[in-house]
Length: 268
Image (cartoon, rainbow, N blue to C red; front, side, top):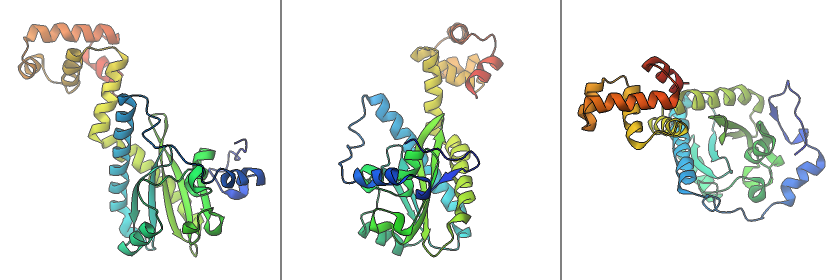
């Protein structure tokens, strides 16, 4: 898309698009989207997506559990991955959850424009910013009773997914803009950074950048935790001298001189 949003505006809505751009959402409708696994070129890519997806699911659930009691109106939260596939659905009541299932809105559904037309997720995907779509602006009739706000989840330098929060059309949507901004910040900057599996993945990627061997990775992980050479030798079943030789090799590959520099390079 060529439309640009003013720098002072952090979100977009269908009114910001040209008529021809809005039409594109409808023109591509019902073109089959590829299976989310089909585009994976390797087990590494598949594993990476799985780790980030699970971390996002755990994070949005943790955040919503914390704040749900402070939201006095019915709501629906969609969590989608970078390709628009719904990973998780959180509703404020079982009745709403049942209604969503009956409407076919559940994990495994794609909310990208080629499948679902114009909605807050597809708009956010196209514009790379927060998207707002109200009631009848939606292509899918299932969303006509909802005002929706969606924001991208920027993690590790790229968009890993999208969070959409939907309220009834009778609700003023403007109040949700700062709310969703804070929500995405809490998910990405707090909960995801605390995710153990994601921490391990990030660390392994860092080790890979320095071309550490499997043994060096084992030693580096424990060295990063400030374990002593004696402790590491006992844990890995190698001599203390071997541990120190491995540490020297790690330092050489990472171009550092001591443990402080080593930790600083790995903890951003």
